Amino acid sequence: MRRNETILRRLLAIAAVSILATQVAGAQTWPARPVTIEVAFPPSTTTDLAARTVAQDLTRVLGQPVIVENRTGGGGVIASTAVPKAPPDGYKFQVTTIGPGVLRPLIDSQVGYDPVADFTPIALLGDAPTVIVVAPQRGFTSVRDIVAYAKQNPGKLTIGHPGVGTMGHLVGLLFASEAGIQVNFISYNGSPPIIADLLGGHIDVGTIAYGAAIGAAKTLAVTNDEPVSFLRGVPTMKDAGLPNVTGATWSALYGPAGLPAGIVAKLSGAIATFLAKPETQQQFDKVGFHALGGPPERLRSRMTEDRAKWSKVITAAKISVDP
Figure (tube, rainbow, N blue to C red):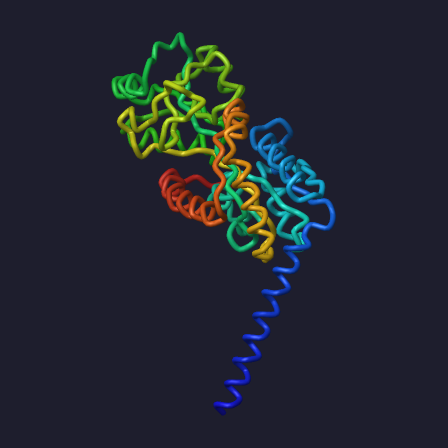
């Protein structure tokens, strides 16, 4: 019996070494043809621009074209249901955000994919900070002004957000909860109409991802943990006395589940090197995107932390798109 067990252990060890050798050899020869990255959002969005910038550098590093295709629809859900069906051979990837990657599955039990089991995390590209914005004519000069007004006028403060279950919505809910204020939330289809209604005097506050849409609106605070380099002088919510009100819309690169470790390491290493360059960070700063990078573990940790944090907010607010 012991002899049979010894033989079995040896055979399993040989098999494991063989699999590892095959993966290493595959990573060394990969890629042998063009690689496709599907972006879950439309062209010219911050996520799309980040993906195309990274793809351009990967084309140089890998020696094969890295092609970016936009597969939009369902707030990123369509791309997220398609990529897991691709073979894990290193030729199809996805760039998506915290929305499809963490938030949507928390409010939609029929979303059609498992954000953990169906994907291989590769690299955290960066994030776009959520900001608290107001119209200049409204008279608010700080977040404390907003809180003071809301407490003096319970239920009158209106906050516009870019859709149910979005980061802007969740940050707004967390803001109201932490500040202890009663708020009327108004859902919009994206950020531009929020800015239009702010400037038109129809709502008081907006909680949106920083970007070109802000225009003439006044940014009172950023919800990142630390000040953002491209928003000099804009305080954090911690500075406003609300340290727990944090949240940003991050973008990341994923592959199908079962992607060989060698390919993951090759990609994440190349991306981390590119994102660490000062010229890359400056390029991203211009479009309001904070470059991050790092190993796959950093992305996994971010997903785990955000899932734990926002599931509490979602449960408390009873947010769901289920019928």
